[in-house]
Length: 94
Ligand code: HEM
Image (cartoon, rainbow, N blue to C red; front, side, top):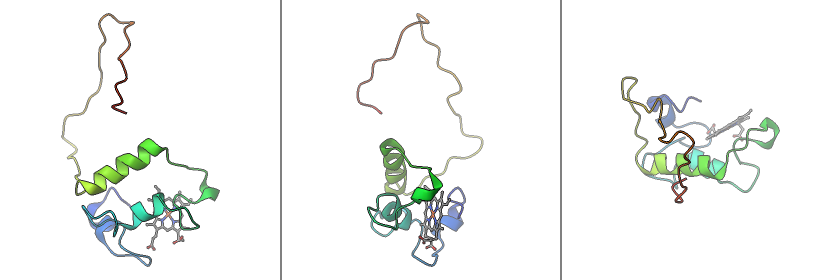
């Protein structure tokens, strides 16, 4: 199952539709990553647990209607700190 391919994420599978944009309750991946029972994904045997931050990022992405960026969209490649040894303060942004 490829979630980076929009059409595939929208196509109903055996257990439901992976993603219904903007609809957390009907998006199977949301039900799965937050599941407390045997349906939980990724499955324990895979040893690929998601952090709470990662789960929340996926949840917000689905809630926002699963926007996909284009290959050509700008990305942040580097952030220079001045002075160099300065640290950014955490303000609960992540
Ligand atoms: C964030 C990561 C993952 C997500 C969001 C996810 C999501 C899902 C979803 C939505 C289904 C149901 C598909 C259907 O309707 O037929 C499913 C099934 C399944 N997935 Fe995952 N999966 C993830 C990672 C993994 C990994 C890492 C493995 C194995 C190494 C795995 C193994 C399976 C298996 C065996 C099934 C079929 C059995 C079942 O439905 O419980 N998944 N997954």
